[in-house]
Length: 179
Image 1 (cartoon, rainbow, N blue to C red):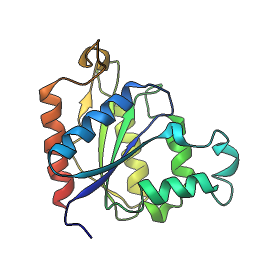
Image 2: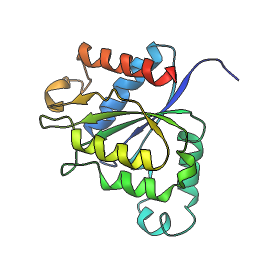
Image 3: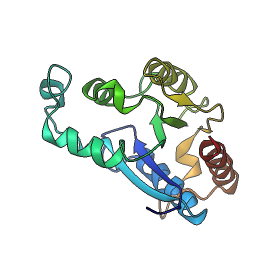
Image 4: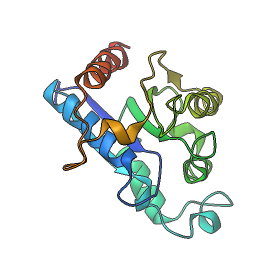
């Protein structure tokens, strides 16, 4: 067993080639530069019929595999949440409903909001924190809110270049791993 800290990062959308996935990769780069091992997943890896196999019985083998790889091994999780209709994506709620609450109990969780608008998904972060609190997860107070995400990404590479946001990720990561 390694002494290196490790986190699981979950991109909260199933939209292909999303800005959320680009933020997940920027967070991963920051974490790895700080000596933290990272596993990440985007919700586009979920089965397309999740609404029929997950919440109403035993989760399908694809969901079990994703949870055993990206949730269970970690005491610390990071969720990157895009704003969809003033909240967080329905696919994320469906994923949370498909996974037994015991998989989130006692986890220490960090949240990052992503939005084209001005509030960085503030409402979605608050709403998702309420879900996590209900599941008995410990959500840390520092939640970077990336507003106007289209302006924060390099047009040529799609990479997040803003050093101030990368510093917010470093600060959040320290808080996350401190507990």
